[in-house]
Length: 596
Image (cartoon, rainbow, N blue to C red):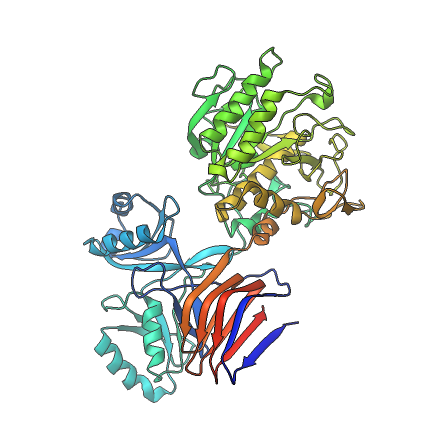
């Protein structure tokens, strides 16, 4: 049920530091900003059924319109390289090329990029992308749609399009009065700006800025063995998987580095090498690059679960298939300097930019160390969790171990480590999986298909196989919101876990992120739910609203807002709306807060 607060003002109303927490709905719609210029801080909108909808510019993508002969040639890569951009695959998009910035940008960098592209003789138009909550940003093109009020209005349309140098492409088949138009030779900065102009003449029934929705089914890669990876998509028990396909519609881990501290990874594996980071390290010798010894299969298998390459028509796919794998090798055989070497490897990883450090090893249920501790190794782990990612903290995952009833060290020594147990494909704890008071979550660990050396694949069992599933989810969460702290990422994963199996989950002291069970932790990790539990914030600051306007998103923050001139401001949030400083609603205006 919607909760609606509607205020018709007789006097000016001022609200300071007020907060309205709203009811649930997991699905998130677009949040917003659009532009007639290259100003990434400007506030913009589009018209939908007579309502003005605010938008938020995404400064990490642009679409560019080029000549058809350029779009059909290899020289588009040259265009992308000229500006240090990545060209995205675009099927059936004609002369529109999608370019992605290699790193997150600030407003001024985006503005300069747009200005530079506009000066490039190869580029006819630079078109914006917009955020839509946790979903993938959505692009625009040189196309927009318009609906006449009556058939007699075609003369009005023809006159106005001639005046504005807009091209009428055609009437939409089976959609009476709807036309497709192009801004390609006009002065309009975007299809949204053009559609707004035509709507605001009040001469036409409707407009549609033709957002480039990607309406394909939920992401299923073409990797031929994907159907055998039950941990990613379970065809027998629909809820007993990590919900990876839905998460991939939001992100696949691009921009995130996952350090795999293990027995070395086959450097030539065809389903992995495209995702290898350029840096690697051998913790045993204290030198780069990493070392791979033929016959060691464990590290290659773990790496494939984290980030086997997406959609390359080869073998399998990883949980975060666009993340980069940072290889940190050690043969993991007992030695007198074992702990120091592993400490070195973990420290090297966070100091060289790893966002997630995954460790599918431990002390074999205490068989070697019992209750003994390594201060140097523990310091390396805690340093990674507190100092990594420029102080945001690395997410560190460890296997719970394969000695049922006890847990491996060092995964059990610190509450901040994300310690992972194993389940089978029907949602029960794996018979071998370690458990106890330090267990945080569980993930698929029985019969897990992944990469093996010499371009092969195979299945393995163990909490070693469960742990990289969780590391991959951490990479997805960080990719979608790089400013999150380690604690925020871990909290998102724990709070969103599914309560699977015939186990009693209960409120437990020291476990703040939901009900918990000592054999299952918070439950089975859910990649999609974890992404959606960390809502991006839509900000609406320092605005004077003079015409009806709607701002919406998962979380909305407002500050210093004035509603005047008889306008109505509607704030829609999936989880909450917070107003800081002053909100003034003048006499005769309306202000409404509601849930989605």
